[in-house]
Image (cartoon, rainbow, N blue to C red):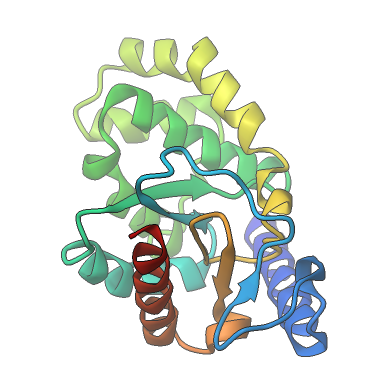
Length: 214
């Protein structure tokens, strides 16, 4: 039942994003070639770098299938690019997975768990929402349950989860996966049409922002 609700929610979000792109009004911004403008532009962490944010959800099959394209690009991204994975939070189910990501981040095991978490959700059909289920998953990857519970309940994780709630709305993100370049440009499936083109458009916008910085 929960899985069915997940799928229904994602389809709804994706259709909303697609409809907004068709009308050219998503986030109140005009369309570009495979992207939309973020309105208003959002600040970045380091103005000397080009920031790329990926909004994702572990329960999103499109995010899962986007991973190979994204990972291939990450191996070749320019040195001046700062890449940030950002769990999108639209409801309690998404928040549970976001909290798992922030816990992994706090424990320094994101690289170790990220791909397997996707696999567990998408292929093995594990829910992985409760603290106990997550503790078992982390333990399977060498994290002591005591360390997991401490990080899971930490102020740092609680704060990041709170910041994540509503963050997607600031960038006009209504579905996943979505990429934000330098706080100015929003790229999603509705705009770029294919995963390969999402990366191609991202590359062009990075070049544009890098040239402007010079």
